[in-house]
Image (cartoon, rainbow, N blue to C red; front, side):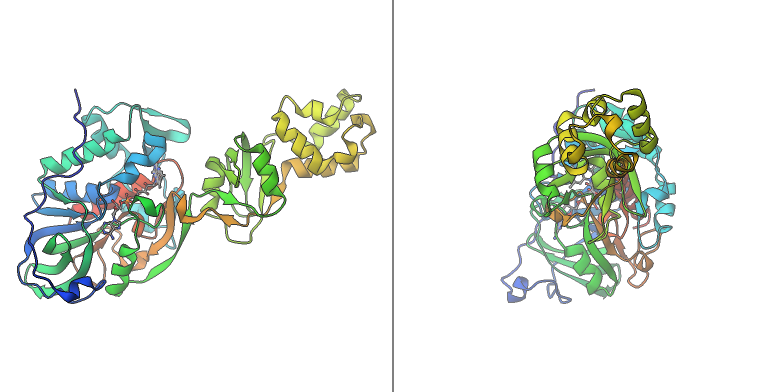
Length: 434
Ligand SMILES: Cc1cc2nc3c(=O)[nH]c(=O)nc-3n(C[C@H](O)[C@H](O)[C@H](O)COP(=O)(O)OP(=O)(O)OC[C@H]3O[C@@H](n4cnc5c(N)ncnc54)[C@H](O)[C@@H]3O)c2cc1C
């Protein structure tokens, strides 16, 4: 089946041109002060992964849905995800792969809209995909396919999508059926249900904003502190020069803190450490904490070094390591851990020195100065406190009709398609009830 290029903007809603109003310039306010409103059953702020899933689900139920997005295009993060191929879900979705102050919160939504449901949608649209390591599913061709699929479903469900939409004020209303009034540069809208799907703070150039957190606070919901997640580590000590010299080299390692470790690939960069192991660990890392790299996972290093000494007494240590690690890395390790023994035959290196070398190779302790932050982070940790929301519907317990979905909520997945699955599942949970 031939697929058309995605139309990123569906037909816009009838626009209302407001009279000049000085209050329009204000930030979020609880006073919308306009009378001519376009009413929708559901207004969704944010046309990303979760917002579009919520929109199509609600639209399929016959709800009149409007999606408002501040960007020039919807779904920008979908398009840039997975290196342009969108790692849209994972075969092994488990609650343990999500971080939240309440680790149980995600279970209900993830159980009711599973990876198999999303895969069925992808297959219905005949999007070719493949599995990579650890159950990660990627498009064969392009992330555009996933966005086109969501837009297509939205169009079929008669969802309206408005881009370039600057939200100026949101207020609760006591008129029957009009619980919320949303004022924007594209007109004023009222809605029975308001869904906040504005995502996190990562990659501000892709339209990220703090609006979702501001709205949560405006309506009295607690917002837990946010920080960048799935983000490379940076260094300001001597390791910075080492990583610069090794920049571009990827190694299979176990990377961990005292509490959590990941067996994955690490990538040296000119700023520090990236690659899956570093990104995964960044979700768990606290500022100031050291991290440790096992460069030869699976090898019992003290025993292995003693064995090399016995079997290759005239050999140099770097020669024995050459088949296992890149030459450039061995050179750096030699400078760090056995420079005095660099030209000494293994037989002449005392066992105590070999033990210290084993410790260096198996527990190379590094101290990141920080992470690259929201500029390059894939996700935002923290956000709207899940204690404030129903885990079944994502509705605010305090403000009926107000919903928070996706990354703006304090639920963050591991690398590997988990964050999209949370976006689909939470979007679907809200879409079924709004
Ligand atoms: C580079 C990169 C690669 C990634 N790759 C993957 C991957 O392969 N697999 C995976 O599972 N996850 C991946 N992620 C994470 C994933 O993209 C997010 O977790 C997911 O998009 C969150 O969905 P969301 O709907 O909550 O937010 P988003 O998809 O970010 O959507 C939020 C929407 O809200 C709009 N918005 C924001 N502020 C406003 C405002 N003030 N007014 C109006 N609209 C607003 C934005 O324009 C945007 O369209 C990646 C992230 C990045 C940055």
